[in-house]
Image (tube, rainbow, N blue to C red):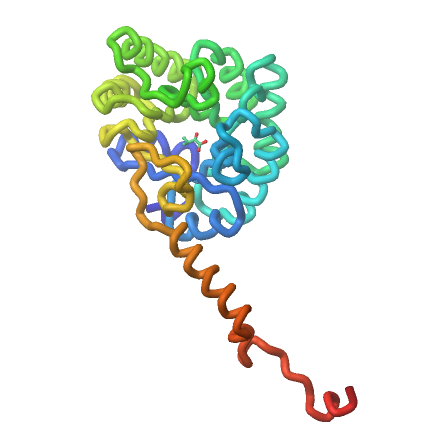
Length: 277
Ligand code: KIV
């Protein structure tokens, strides 16, 4: 649990000390405040906001402006966690200049401490340039959702031996570019273990088993707020969707019956004034 600020340096210390890192997504001020208060190490403004906040089918349509808007809100609610902004699809693919400029927006406009982006060889030149601009980068391998069309769906990655070796090489390349940690998504647990033992930087797993140096979950999945998709790797610690519906049904009933608002929710008028109304 984060008692003091978790910084980019804390990743290295955590791996050295064998202390597992907790990461959760957040997209707004109120949730960021609660998660930070609970002591999570890192808040990720994931491009998953496309799905869980904006209702898109996948993450591809979310824009830089959407991401900046939500990252600013999370920054206002955060005090101690490391705040990571997720670079959206096509914000770092076209050119090195554009990648650095967009990464800079997360830090300068929105108050992020680091950015995350997907890929390895295909974006290594962009990662190096962003790090050269003094912006820490988190890598992301395995089921990288921005490649959903190239993968032909949301599928576990690294299942055959060639793909597994390629992923180990990709992790080593990411380490060489200078990334501070690597997210491993939907990867068989023993491959994640091998990568975790091979690199000096922490691995943060999501659907990658227990051997990673840390874990990340989408907050809507953890709270049971997004029933549209429930991957095998998600543990729902609460079932809030049902509780929200029950509470709202009660509100509708009480509005309809006149039970709400009651006296305690009402501003009374001075009787002398009300007689003159
Ligand atoms: O967008 C996101 O929420 C992510 C995490 C699930 C790693 O990339």
